[in-house]
Length: 264
Image (cartoon, rainbow, N blue to C red):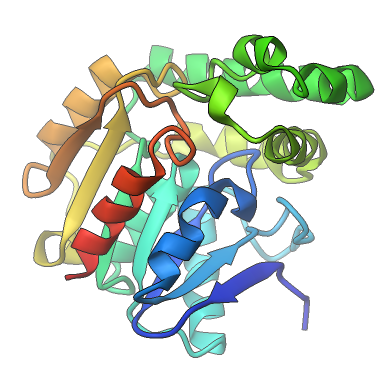
């Protein structure tokens, strides 16, 4: 059996953490221990990201990864978890909620609420960041060691980039550069758009929280959070003031609280 890189901490009812495009499970490091005080926490590297190899049978993208993760959770005896996802992981979490796999969902800046222009902006920005990470290499490593360097390099992802741990930033950039399923998952965004007329499935029957950083410029807060409110009117919608696309180091206490509230 292919070894999928993942972390398990704590005990109790399960919370599964799912990262976004070009990311890896370590993006949730600022909140893992806060969640593990009350729950078993499972953070996973999706196939083709982090330390997990790509799998030929898995179609990268929100729906393909949701289908794969459904089976992986069953194989690992993880039943009816609360699923918290970031960006692409937020779309995966919503799909697991729709299918009745998740007992609750917390989605941080989830994909699927863009129009054609917004989608192309997201794809282009992440592609540019990946290209820079692959080309610059050691130069980026040195720059993120300085607060001014982090302020410049990480401002598109974090509301407070200087707060990001330098070693965590290096790990994130290395993961972005090395993600073998990046292109396929990025291109699949064109097949994943959520509309008001879509069948919500079991989403309407479980706790759903959509949280969006007000400084998110990857999946732009102003337009896409508004669309999410229209598509998912039954969900709890929360703005995260001052937070960026990846809010976990910007405001770990609030991010953890939102997830924990969704498990109640």
